[in-house]
Amino acid sequence: MSDDHIIIFDTTLRDGEQSPGASMTKAEKIRIARMLEMMKVDVIEAGFPIASPGDFDAVRAIADIVKDSTICGLSRALDPDIERCAEALKGANSGRIHTFIATSPIHMKNKLNMEPEKVLEQAVRAVTKARNYTDDVEFSCEDAGRSEFEFLCRIIEAAINAGATTINIPDTVGYQIPHVFGDIVGNLIREIPNSDKAVFSVHCHNDLGLAVGNSLAAVMQGARQVECTINGLGERAGNASLEEIVMALRTRKDVFNIESGIDARHIVPTSRIVSSITGFPVQPNKAIVGANAFAHESGIHQDGVLKHRETYEIMRAQDVGWADNSIVLGKHSGRNAFRSRLADLNINLKTEEELNAAFSRFKDLADRKHDIFDEDLQMLVLQTRAGNEEAKYKLMASHVCSETGETPMATVTLKADGKEVKAEASGSGPVDAVFSAIKKATGETPALQLYSVNAITSGTDAQGEVTVRLEQEGRLIHGHGAHTDIVIASAKSYIDALNKLVSKQQRAHPQHDGV
Ligand code: KIV
Ligand code: ZN
Image (cartoon, protein in one colour):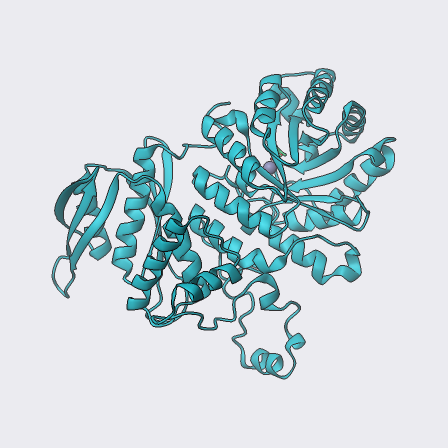
């Protein structure tokens, strides 16, 4: 690995999914993994195979499908974890086992109840065992940000001697400050005698809003792998955001003198899909991927940008995948135009049936909406794929009556296991009435935890994308629906979530079910 290449290690599907409410189905994980592969992410951490059968399955499926990125699975420093991880990675072209153990006094004493010497022994055993399955073994010192420097030096040296090829320094609780963290990583690299035998990596959490700053400070001191997530998704305040790391390294190449292999044009579409799948919205002023990241409101700024773009812009919107909102398709576009536009967007529908289903949705949308934008196509394909999964409930029709001064009423007709059911209900608003009618028709009564609507494109004929989060017996499930009529989009998203609830395809908490 040359010294001027940085390895981008994406952990959206593992650490990102770990944030409460962000769990994903296998199909959703595969969809994101494919987008990360297209983006040329070097390493995709696909999950934690021992955590649950669902996680195992998802890692195995991604290892079988994604061939251009290294696929990584997480395991504690325990034999059963490592064996399960190796099993899940069997089909990978290039598979990595990532094993970790806590190294801070507070974690070793209170969580592991182990003496440091025992922790060191266990780490060496785990790395040695993992090397029996693959030459690509990553070792992480959990809570390194609060660990003692001398102990870190000893355990890392031992892990490298045992065969670890990547050493990861996580700031697990987001406690570090850039110049301090940079020095820790730099000093580790300088003082550990065999440090040249491994790539040093960092994994920063964002509790103080410093995850990206800390990661970049470590890069300045010799780290050559950064672990990050799309949109900064992750436990608590999240992880370092991939898009910010990649664009900071690229925009300030004069400072870092380092290159990632990332194809940044896939950043915005991937950000949207991750947000849509997890139901975690992207704040409008979020760097790179926020709706306002390239918008210039003030007259002075607009004038400056029009005269010379670089007056107020340090990056080009299209370089990170913001579409120029050109109208791509409409009512009269045919199948070939549709297929070729999907190809331009790097969306490959694998089967003729998938293409047919997507095209018929497209025609249906084009009847309601004059201009079809790239964002509409992306959502349409996402919905087609989701719709292909077996569903217990299907929305057949809905009728809503909402008048000034009257109580809103809704009637819905559903297919439940192939049988038609109909129910009517009132509500405080049309959406509330539709949700109540669906509950009545299905007999399902989950608690609604989140309801959000986003316009996919601009204009009053834009499709509304609705996300709901439902909770039942400790399980959190997201549903999505898109339509030009937001009441229908709402009904679709509610039914999507119900179908996931009844199919049990999503886990309550991906990382904690089985461990
Ligand atoms: O934050 C952390 O320490 C982790 C490790 C498992 C790498 O996610
Ligand atoms: Zn983490």
